[in-house]
Length: 379
Image (cartoon, rainbow, N blue to C red; front, side):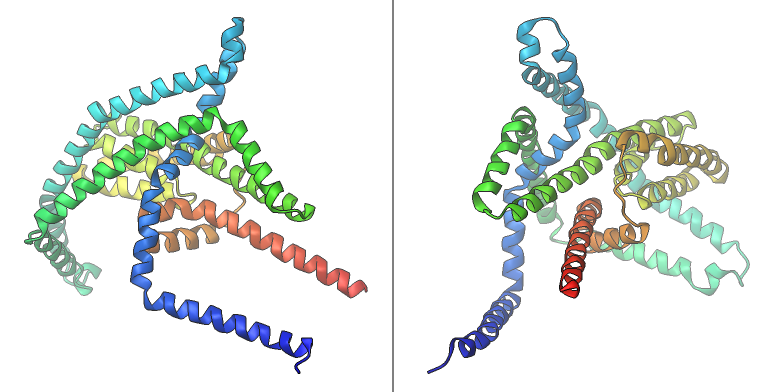
């Protein structure tokens, strides 16, 4: 008869074999698993949007709630959060109405005009490069022919028999995303209104599942850290991105740059990427301004954009965020590249807060391991 020690010796091998079988079956049906994961995230996308909007709306919601709390009317002061939620809801509806009726048509028109003008701009660039000396780097590396061939291949790929089907599918997906966004707005308002009860519920759930006090405290600390990181990134970055959008659009309008609203939107969106986002936006805006307005206008726009970028990075954003994400620029670059490669634009935006959270978890794991090693060494 085998002893308990002999049976326990085979237990890790058995567990490892089961894990390897699960991994093998998962890899064998990787495409199906990926489809199910994508479908799951699509189903819960309204909840995702709700969390995103609740973080973004928290700052104005809290400010309005404080104002209602100071009102001397007893009913309003006692129900300050409810009235604040109603005001935010009305403002949200007005914002959506303005975007649909004013901003989106301008953006759509700018995108169409820019797309229609690209062949002409490309011809100007090709003519400029052709006038350069034969020994220039553009001719040596055959850059013009390569770019031209890529543009032609891209244009030909759009003219296919599946174009109508792809457009129809895109319209359906866009309508589904709009519905998810609207439902997410409703969920975000509920989360703002009931945020104390939601926090109490998860705290009670944590206490009910984990009986060990250290485990409960550690998970609660992780939850607070994750909440702080997400709030710092989404809410504070959201406000700063709005400032970037308004300021950059105003600068471009002052210098009469074409597609000012579209380029300002690019600056606001890319501002969500720390360190790299603002730089990428400035390069894109300067490049488009160079193509559409010439070298002189590009320089005129570049100088105030760089000045504003420095003011925003060193004065405006730190005042809004009040705390740093404490993440290395190298880690930001790696996170953005990996997130963009696997999940596109959304992955680039979410990669940074996720990297901060993973970094904190790994740091705590290393600290705990070192403490245990020190205890064992003392013994």
